[in-house]
Amino acid sequence: MRLQIRKYGDPLLRAKGKRIEAVDDEIRALAENMLETMHAANGIGLAAQQVGHALQLTVLDVTQVEDRPSTMTLNGEPVADLATAMPLVLINPTLRLSEETDLGSEGCLSFPEITADIERASSLKMEAETLEGDKLRIEASGLLARALQHEVDHLNGILFIDRMSSAAKVSHGSRLKRLQKETAKM
Ligand code: ZN
Image (cartoon, rainbow, N blue to C red; front, side, top):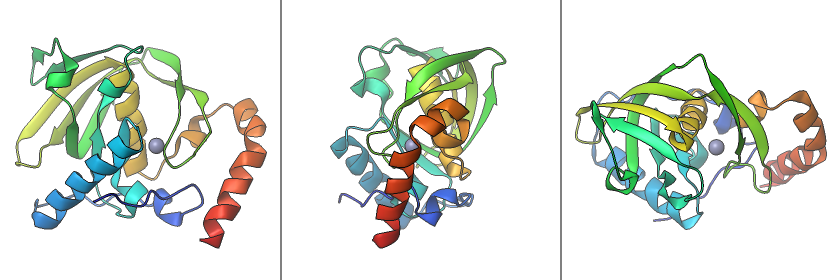
């Protein structure tokens, strides 16, 4: 089932996600619906907040984007073909970021028509849990590292506009105001 994606101005996007202590049928159904919603919207990531749930749950699939490479290890093993490891469903993810950073273009399903260059750690280590209750360790660089940081930000109520340069925020100012107004009317 496709879910409605919350847009900028919806207060839920600012809510910090609650830790998931046990995966039940409701969480499994939510994750499945989030995957369907993300793929239908041609997104590469979707956080629970974006569909109305303040939970530490996010889904990702970077294989939609072919011209921005990633590297990945999964539980210590290099993943040669990312498609074999996607999509990812991540529960309670935590990140350790590299000091080195990159500037790269980002968009967000909660901010239609807005993209901006955002500075992010170039690589990271992530720990999370799977729907099956297993521990998951991922090391990532490139687009996957960027997408993971964007999604984990969502789980903590942080939005990519918070990390935009002030110049980018000014240039997107009127679009952001319009989006907030449209959301308030819904
Ligand atoms: Zn987003």
